[in-house]
Every structure is written in C-alpha cells, then in structure tokens.
Length: 463
Ligand code: ATP
Ligand code: MN
Figure 1 (cartoon, rainbow, N blue to C red):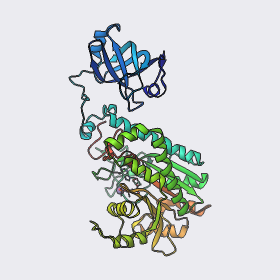
Figure 2 (cartoon, rainbow, N blue to C red):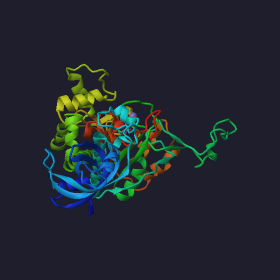
Figure 3 (cartoon, rainbow, N blue to C red):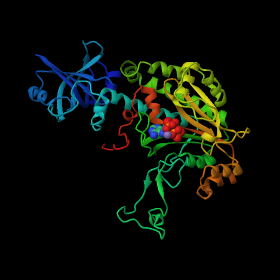
Figure 4 (cartoon, protein in one colour):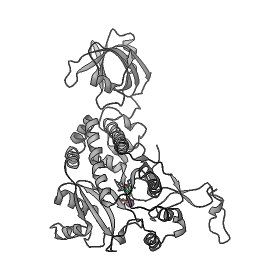
C-alpha cells in the first residue's frame, strides 16, 4: 500500500484506492459498531477521518491505545464519506499505534487553549490547528520569497551570524565570547582584554546582513539574504523578538525608485503565492483569528501603492482631523499611529513614504541634494504600519566618511565597507523586511511569539 500524506489523500485520493497514512490522533469517537478516528500529520488543516470497524484485528486493544496525541499508522481503503464536509474517508484494515499518549497527562485535550498557555508547551503546540496553520503559511512565505528572487535572477547570499560590525551603530547586540566569564583577562587599565578572546576582538550576533549584502551586490549585481538576526532589545512587545528572520535584497545599478518597485512587486508576489498555495489555512485565519486577513491581502495584491515623500506625509498628518498620541513635526520619526493613519484612513491602501530627514536615519542612506533628507523609503500598510524599510545607499566616498563620523562611529571599523566606494562604486539600493512581521500580517496573529516555532524573548528560551 502506498504511503501518502493526508493532504494528498484529501485532495486527490480516489474511491477504492488502498493507502497507508501516518500521523497523530486528534480525536476518537466510539459508537456501537465502529469508531471514528481523526488523524492529522501536519500536511493540512483538515484531518482524515478513519473508520475502524469492530471486526478489525485487536479492535478493543487498539482503540484503548488510540488516545488524543497517540502516533498511529493506518492502512485501508478509501471510501466515499457520508459525513458532511468531507469527500472521502479511510476504512481501516490495519492499525498500528506507535506511541500512546496518556489522556491523564497529555495537555492538548480537545478544547480551546489560550496562546499564552500554548507557549508554555512549545514542544507540543505545533500539533494544534492554529499553530499548524501558522507554520504552513510561514513555510509558504519562505518558499515564495526564494521563488520571487530566483525568478528575477537574484543570488541568495549567506551573510555571517557572528560579526564584528554593528550595522546600525545602534547597540542592542548580543556579545559572543569564549572567554572564561569567571576569570576575565584584563588589560593594564583593567578593561576586558578582548585580544585574548576567540576572534582577537569583540564579536557579536548580527543585527542585519546589509553591509555584507552590499559587498556581494558589488560582485553579483542583485543579491538577497534571508537568515536569522538578533537584537538584545529589552522590548516586551507583540512585535519584537530577540531572534528573528530578516529578508534583505540589495541591488547594484539601482536607485530609490527601483527599490520601491521591487518592494511593491515583492509584497504582491508573496501575498499572492500564499493565497494560492494555502487557501484553507488563510480561510481559517480569516474566520477564526482576524476577519480582515483576506481583505488586507486583497488590498496589497490589487492596489498600486501610494507614494509620498516624508515632507508631504507630515503636511497630510498636520491637516488630519485626528488626535495623535505622538507629536507630528518635521524632523521627528513617524510613529505607528501616523503610518496607520496614512495607509488605513487616508489612502486606504499601502503607501511608500520616502525621503526622510537625515537626522533620524542610518548613516549609510544616500544624502539627497537638499542635504536635509536621505533617499530612504518605508512601506506602510493598512492594519500593519511599517512592513519594509529600505534606502538607496550612499555610494560617494567623501560623503559616506563624513556620515560615519557624524554618527560617532570609527572610520577604521568600516575600512572594507568604504573600499566598496573606492573601487568600482555604483549607485545601489536595498531594503529589509522582518519575516515574522510578514507572517503576522498574513495570518492576523496578534503576537509575534506565535508565528515562530521557538520564540526568543527576554527571560524566555525554554524550547
Ligand atoms: P521597530 O521600530 O519596529 O523596532 P526597527 O526600526 O528597529 O523596527 P529595522 O532595524 O529597520 O527595524 O529592521 C528591519 C525590519 O526588521 C523591520 O522593518 C521589522 O520588520 C523587523 N524587526 C526589527 N526589529 C525586530 C524585532 N525585534 N523582532 C522582529 N522583527 C523585527
Ligand atoms: Mn527596533
């Protein structure tokens, strides 16, 4: 008998076909003549209904072992299902229980559990409907991202996780050391002597792969990174993790307009791919988690994004009849409430805000001719706020050196980054997208801890 995934059986299984499925028992229902088992192997939201007749060998003992959470293999024949909402079911001819799950202690009994509770059983929560759907959608997003870039000739480059440079100059980095913390080597002035550390200098977990992606773009033209990044920020919010995944494309011979075009095409593609490949899961989110999920996706896919400058956006916000919590003033950063007002209430679709004041953006963003703004762009979306942040990079050596110094950073630390401007420099641009934020928007999940299998947040690293 052919071993099949439950998703394949539900989609394409034919009456009279002999199949074997493996998975975990979700529920069991005993009637007089037979029993029903709902089996799930993670390949789809829907379970496969298995019918066990009393004439099955070892019927009584098998049924006793088949509790919620038990792992099981069933062989049998597919038959038309008389039950509502399912096309076929599996009539068992042989059932093997691999591992039982004691109903007294198995925590996932058939009832609704809060996401907070599920986080305390991080090793089991993926067996629930919601987390199952989240991680299938997360996978579809990741596949879509690679497919999008592959189809456009981008090279996927792997930037390092351990690094000596702080991309943003913003701090909040985890230190990486092999020094004996109980016996730290000291210099004469009693500082910690990092020259004796593993790399001979201070090292950190990366906060962004951008600078290294720029290196690779200067050889391969169009590249992207997609990997874990780390921030030791002590912000306990529903949108921050200490370890999260980031997507960062970088393009040579590209200006801010090309960057915006890519960001817009990228979001439309990823949302489209997920709607196409995970319709049941998205349907579930729309029904059970957030009833704007489908409308948000539709909005992103079908509308041309609005494009405004930061200066225009400030003027629009000043004219708004709305009371904001944070001040609106040229020179101050836009807060999430401002971004959402623009996208949600004013434009009613995603918008790209460009040309931010130089004072609130990173040193590597290209200085505009007005010397007051930089060629930055943020994509803001209804319900979501900022989803992508990007910029054209400063490709002029003298200006970049000045900006690094103004940011209080050491020129020597950036010698190789500056070399890119000495040898074959060219206009280039890119953006960063927080992968978990994308999955949140796609699914409507309120807390970022519930869209990554093993969330890392302050004081939490159990699984
Ligand atoms: P925020 O203002 O939300 O803290 P940021 O300005 O620090 O974001 P960037 O440094 O521009 O963010 O990082 C690029 C993207 O990475 C952001 O647009 C966001 O989607 C995502 N991101 C940033 N910090 C986190 C975090 N701690 N956890 C998850 N995603 C994050
Ligand atoms: Mn931040």
